[in-house]
Image 1 (cartoon, rainbow, N blue to C red):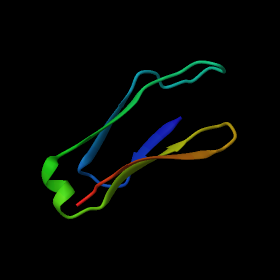
Image 2: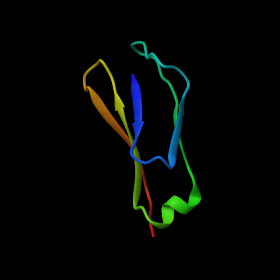
Image 3: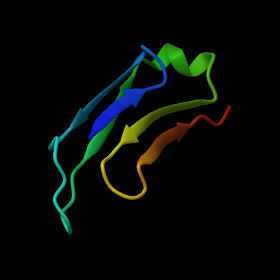
Image 4: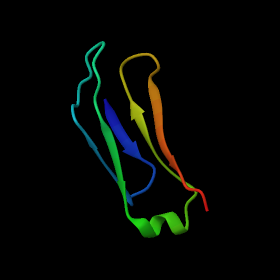
Length: 63
């Protein structure tokens, strides 16, 4: 599994690098508050070796 944030202003942390079937992990996206002034959405693409291959985690900004 790999995590690729859309912006250098977004960091991340995962509780495990490998996800076994029927288990859960936590993905946290961290961002600086001033980035919300210019963006309407922050997201990270998660690449897996399963199906679906790509997942998107996003934070939408309501202005």
